[in-house]
Image (cartoon, rainbow, N blue to C red; front, side):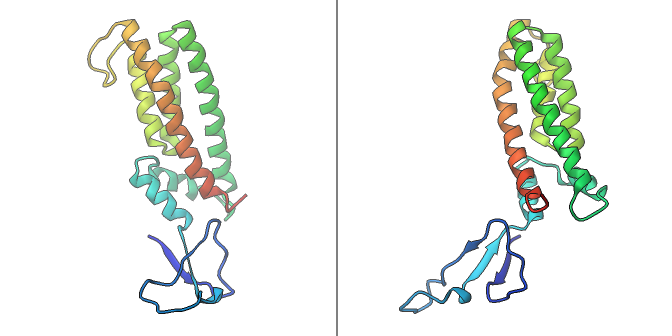
Length: 184
């Protein structure tokens, strides 16, 4: 869903990232239109989250439950929760890198389990899903958790998943920072 508003209204709030549109191709204007005649189109914060949900990045139902816990319009409580998630994820990624170097498969499983839970709690879907795979691999099972595999195979698979989970984390961080940018 995209919000459309005329730029001639001075009471409209300025969106964080507005896009000015030119007149439609059917317009027979010989000169550029006056700036006040242009329309402003922007994605509202919840629309950006809905797109992230459609892309499988965020579980909006869970995230909205976190937003409902906020006492005020500035989302101070949920911002604190999300910032704690960022800290936990980044610390866990560092610990995972160290565990890979030590080839500590049991530690990787525990770290995958921990970050899976944190990600699920805030509705970060892809990070949760990849962390579940890491947890399974750390138990020397295939990614689905059903078939036993060798330690070397598990370590190789986890080594390939770490960049992927970090990339998915960055995607969710971009979406959430964009959402919260209007409040901080």
